[in-house]
Image (cartoon, rainbow, N blue to C red; front, side, top):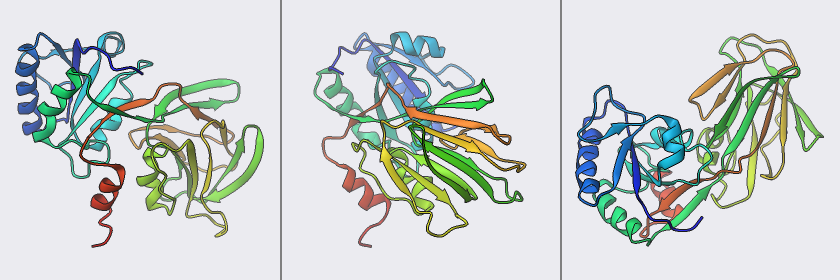
Length: 288
């Protein structure tokens, strides 16, 4: 991906957040003064200033840069809007954590100036393409930036998930569920379940069982070039497949999930004054 001229910008605003909406208005004026088009998706219930609403197809076709005003949840939602295009994403932190939205509010306009001048670095994050199969039929498709999770309902008994890697049998995990996480997602549910932190540029995925029946079933790091096939072996009501914890699909016995690395990356503009370890120390409170 080469540094491109920015002609059209999209703004994604955290829902029901007054301050983020006010910042979107300031952004609208700032871009208008530079003859740059601005569209918004997702959008508020009413139009914000001069921001016009856009459908996802327009985002895929026209947008050069997406400015996200929100937290990591808003950023993860944005990953589903980029389509197949190599779109730049600038995250402005209005949330509580900010693993992905690393820029502070006061840094937004200086960062935009640098982007317009072509002076920026890109942090390319791996995403996963996911297919849910029932027999020979594809029921659902989706994309995940953080993780793909098969999990049981609160009252369901332990589930068994058969795992194949590039058609090689790995194991049948008996557990409350299984997490397949990208390096980006390694600090999310994967970390809570005892999985390792993976540096964002690593070409890897991690398979982490949730409360495994056999204590020697530990997290497994595999190449991100591998195709992972998960099949639900035993009968259990309430088993759900979730992508990034935001979209979910019910599963039945013998349903399978195919996971592979997406050809499209999520391209974050990187702050010049911070690095990944600064974020980890701050967010995980290391040394405190």
